[in-house]
Length: 120
Image 1 (tube, rainbow, N blue to C red):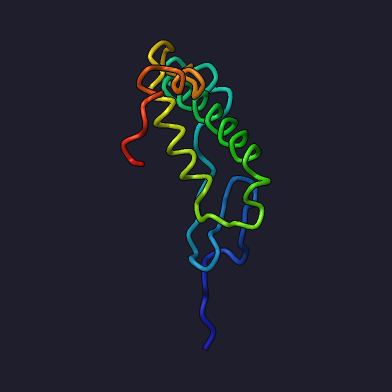
Image 2: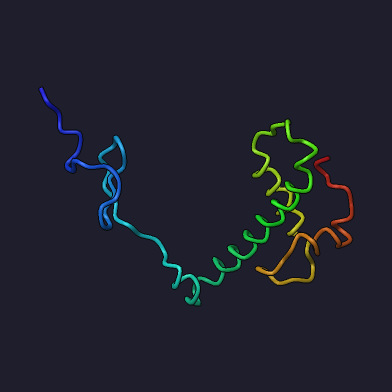
C-alpha cells in the first residue's frame, strides 16, 4: 500500500516555504533582514558581535596562512574552531577598545596578553 510521505510532493524551497528533506516538516522563511540588523537600535549587540567575529575570522585566516607551508601534510581536526577559540580569549584581553572594536593585535600586546597562557 502506498504511503504519503508528506503533504507536499517537493523538497527544497518554493517562494518562502521550505520542506525539510525526509521529514515532511514545512517552514517559512524567517529571521532578521540585513537592513534591520544594520539600522535597528535594539540590535546593537548583534552588530558588535558580528564586527568582532569578522575580525576574528580574518585574524584566524592570517595565522593559518602564515603557518600553512609548515604543516601542509598535517591535518589537525577542528583547527579553525580551536584557533578561533584561542584568538577570542586573546581578543578579550584588549583593555582599551570598546566592545565591538576589540582586536587580537591589541589584546596580545597588553600586559596580560604577554603572559604565557594557563592552558599551555
